[in-house]
Length: 319
Length: 287
Image (cartoon, rainbow over all chains, first blue to last red):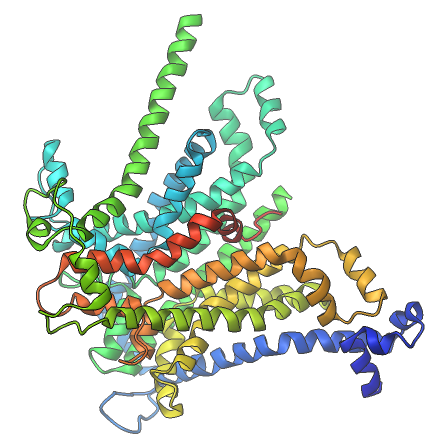
């Protein structure tokens, strides 16, 4: 194939106008050049992938060295950092804590998101306002959401404890106590991401054809039966998609923790992403930090790949 | 029977309303509270029991936007500088992502060789991966390349957030474009680029808009990139707020006003484009 052909296929009509049109498109050479054009269109994005792969590989390499920020010329250390981590109780606790965080977030937010979506689907009046309200938390930077809640959750002067006091509930320590800090972060997380989850599931509910529901109701199905056997299977792909987002984002949660508790009190909210950041920038140990983050990366990769598979399967079932 | 049914329906309505009010209160109260806080003077902010009625003041906003003369911690208009930095980085990142991502999404959609889905998923997986895995090594690389604390460096690193969104959402919208109109254009001699520009782009414009908006919001909201890759010159608004709570006493009123200002661009956008936002968010699940 000549460069001339390629140019024609790429640039289109001015050159092609000279040739008989119908016939040209059928020629295999033209198809190959078409393919090359598509590859060219993809190229800049692929370059970007490479641009991401380089630091990624660099990070994995760093985790295999003994690099400290204050020492020049790190040397290869094999899996020493990883062996070190998996025999370190504080890392294992962070690993367990992070997993627990993800599990609680899912257990709280998935059912709640479905309930909110059902509520929204039912409310016709005021839905214009509702949906705008619902979008708001999504638009607030998570770090700002964290700080907003930190002011409200102050044990002695915060408005939440004050309001709870009005209905007779004793003040809670919230973010300041080892036992309640992590659940408090889940609370903030729920505020920040429930709208996102609910909106996606709501879109699923709205895509369900009314006739299907009506047909079931005519057949005598109650509201619960309609939900259980019709709505729920229909929105399954949407719920799984929400789960993917929430799992990945919770595993790597940082924004809601760092400005609010810095991982404390003691290490009650030290999730893996926070721990990795601290190892690098507070304890000057990039090697150990990258090992922590790479373990986290593998965890997220395995779980989200699995969930993506589930997602595609649910889509195929519904479709 | 009749009254029983009515009663059941009535109580379900009460339950519905109660649940609805509870959820809306939970979601809205923090925003209302912080909005109130941003208009409070110092004494009202720290008052206990918390004040729901108070004399509003613009002092906090004045301090956020123009700096205050009394404090050493915040120079005049420093926060406006952070806003500007965020704006440059987020707009730049979205523009670059559109330029690179839309043709890529189109090529992935139309060039059937069997590996497009894998490539598309690879892009999407960047969205799910812990950012520090790339950002921390970038910190070292950028320092040797002179890209640390530069707009260009930040715009490039923000591609990690914006490109996956753009490619994925635009791809979704492309699925709805009938192939016939493109084939007609191609028979008329249009190459892929021209077909995309002349025929496809006008059709998927809403999709591109919602992708761009979402990408902008996620880029704007990002904390880690700025925390690691920005220094004094390019510090974004998220890092700026974080720093404000570090020194002297925590100035809640100032922080509240800064929070409102920093969330404003996204809120304004949402008011106008709520529908596009939701469509973008759902990213073509199912159909």
